[in-house]
Image (cartoon, rainbow, N blue to C red; front, top):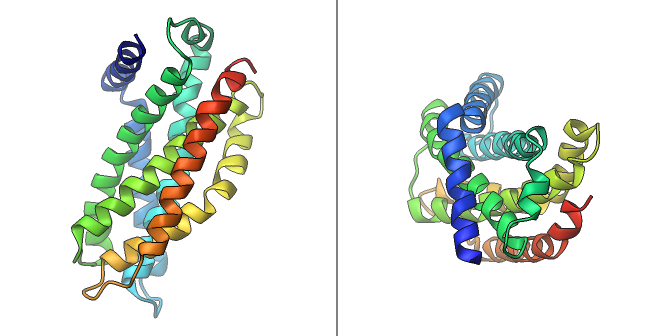
Length: 222
């Protein structure tokens, strides 16, 4: 039953997004416009383009994750679906994992498109694709885990659009530092040792995923 609820919720999220294209459309447009503006602002600075790209890419995606998480939880709030989700015949952690996986898929698709366009704008070369992929996956897992939990926590507040970035972005700083370091390393012919940063990112993801599974039921009850 748990697996059926989890897969059913993911399918529902994907179908809703395919019909309306609200989350991916807004995420994609925001991300690409932000990268283009940052490229115009930074192009004459005497700083490594690899570092500029990595910083611009992850700052943009972190704000995009706020937008995506807010919209994902906002849809459930507007349609009065949160109460219905709480009545599903399975542990409520299935609801949390379904929302997290859906959010991750939306962010991953956005990251792929943004990477292709961002690297062209910043004229960078990807020397180590697997290093880059691991960095992207670990970071997006963390942003998805945090975004859905914090989005639900603030969904009961009238000021949720203001509170969500104030809660999510400070907590994600260690994850984003690791993302920038590992992404920069993937863009260099001789990569820097970043094993410790991957460890930090993995621990971050595990801790906040465990915390989210533990706190999700209380958050749904407001």
